[in-house]
Length: 277
Image 1 (cartoon, rainbow, N blue to C red):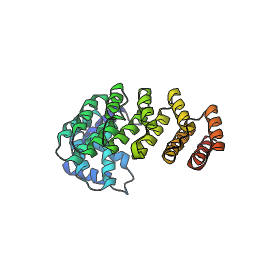
Image 2: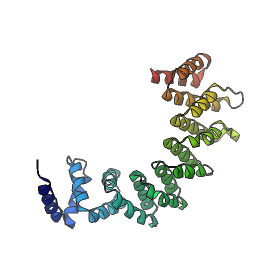
Image 3: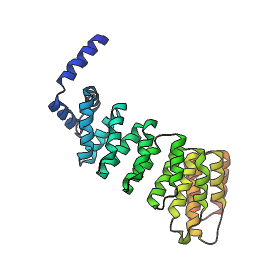
Image 4: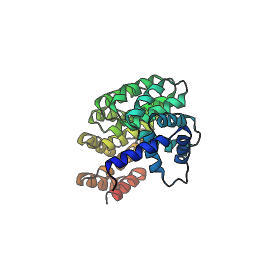
């Protein structure tokens, strides 16, 4: 093994070779589908420091190829605090896709210090940025994150409301259980938002505490006459969610409901039990 002094000298020599052209060459290799030493290249780019980081940020926004963007994104996350501060500065970019990339990057880094900057980006008029903010906040567990998402549940935009529900499930904060219950059992006129009820049931399953389990059990057991088809869709989701939590009482319930139910509820209960076994 090399001595620490030898490693330091080697790093300094390597850093001296990383000029503008060499950095560009390394980024090109980083994005190649045939690259076999991608981790080594990531380390070299990190060693190059701020210059490489800024060029990677520019490439992240400018590249059209999704595969290249993913490799660049992964490398940028490894820069940590250095790239976090720079990404926050870029949130004022006038290009919606640039702002969305920065929000996604900040969420992946997951620093609570960026939470306020991410939340501020929710004020952007572009729905695609708003949706990315909701995803990013879910990657930064905190009471502030939960409070922000709960406040966002009043959104009229169905896509944003659905993403908010999903993000609350990701956070797994019990404080979201009651609001999610209200959405899961709420009946909408003409059942136009059945997906909201189903997603709320899924998120209750992801939280999985005693209160959430009790709510899912009630949803599964409740039968209705009006709107039966849509309600059974929610019951089916509740069954699958319960199956992922497991427990003897849940198994007993699923077995009983499988015997007494038909259609998609029967199928869902059987599928949930197969998952447990």
